[in-house]
Image: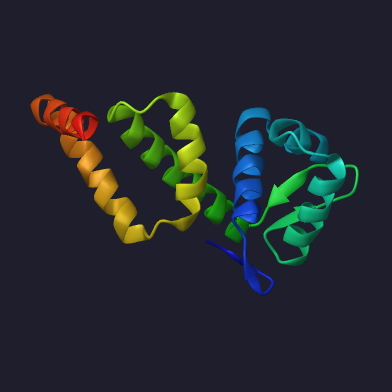
Length: 143
């Protein structure tokens, strides 16, 4: 989790992740795009953007787009990677996509790198060994 000011902020990470996704898809990110994709007010987004700008995670030019700094992009890509690893693993285990989205939103910000590595390795092993995957799925649903 990143430190912004004197506190950690999973919300800040979510913003950085969303900004990076918009840049990857559209080539740019604007306050209005972020607000629409997160389903929140433009005023709330503007406040967070100002905060992230002042803390060096992005550059914001009024009435123009946002650009992530190297540090902001690094954090956004790391959160995106965590999101993908956790989502892929839970989907492989048979969790519904609605449950996966809800669960991963909390997990991605609080999991250690070591735990994430274990899940990633387990995902790889289970993906390659369908017999073991079925055994694990069966055990998970019977408890």
